[in-house]
Length: 556
Image (tube, rainbow, N blue to C red):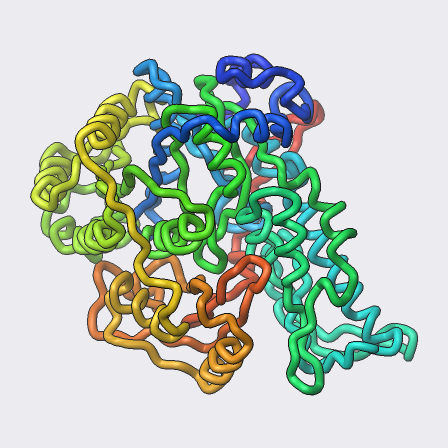
């Protein structure tokens, strides 16, 4: 069986100019990065802005397991299937982060015959967006420390610096560091921290900004520290905005590449929905809606994280209204939720399936709270049985959801025809009554508790003293009306990754909070989740290599 990278490397790609032309995008609209990838110009967005929007379909999933779900694979395959049915569909995906590519994931471009290409470029440096974000972030950090060194006219309390440096790599030793060691000219000695680039506020700002003007306004508002008297200090006060914008001016433009079947894909924005907001950029999604009849986008990790943030943060801010949701599951993952070890998932086990399907059930219930019609799809594997498929089909239909099997990994677009037809049927016959989960005027604590109870199924929320103090402070500073971005493990509906299925009788434990004033949300840190991941015992990097001809192997 061929690996994903082998399939991708054997693919015959079309020049991206040809792929774009099929959607009315002319060469002057493209800023080319070689033959097969490009950025879309600001002029294109200006030209199409008054066109009516197409339909918006969100792809999400049950909680991820080691058995795999294939959310991006389904998204890509669904786009390819729509093209086979003669529909003008565009895919809007998130960019992969380097950290997981070399850590546990090994890449993120879909899989099998439902991939976006060039796969190696996408999983490595791509068009440099994340490098630009890293540079802008660390420029702000450098300006902040330099301000303190050069007299500290703003009265910044070095003990209350909240802006963190970042790097797009899983590097746990950078979570907590000491900077400024050496002599007097080497800066103020203080504790510092790193986050992974894709969890940084700049990542979120880039994804949520409407245009360069909006980007600058958001960068202005970033809170970097507090003064000795407790007042916030912003990037604007450090005169950082102009230089940061210069670093980000190209990164804000959406990227266009293609699927294996030459369907255009706008790949732009932040991957992590467990520790960040985890959605494709607003600019890419809005451009796709103007260029196509159907836009298929995805949000990170399970629906308790990515879909909730897509609805409550991205849609709220950007005025987007999804018309349908595709909820991805696998037989293997549901059996894993039913208590079957990873090594025994290939055998038919209806009892375990009946036990584990409660995870799918909860995600269906959650998505129904947003008023958007749902199509459940099974990413099919050869080891699945008809009885298992039939049980899940009946389960979904009893709950008012359309159901379809997907075989896009093995068959590409052809394997997604059934799903595409079910999505089209849903778009035609079922009305979306989209609504956010909570209003802006709830208190921050009430918003956290709404998500904890309604989405996670918790009994309540407990707060560490530091979290209590910070939430009160943020409310006093005028940030109480912002939505909340929950940082939580992706592996469980609870904040304990070992609790599979549909946990009950638990509280969500909030240990800290901080405001991303530029992005426009308050981040809530729960459980043991880290904003800087670490590498596993055997990182994916061990298997990655390049031969004498420059051919890469080992990316999954």
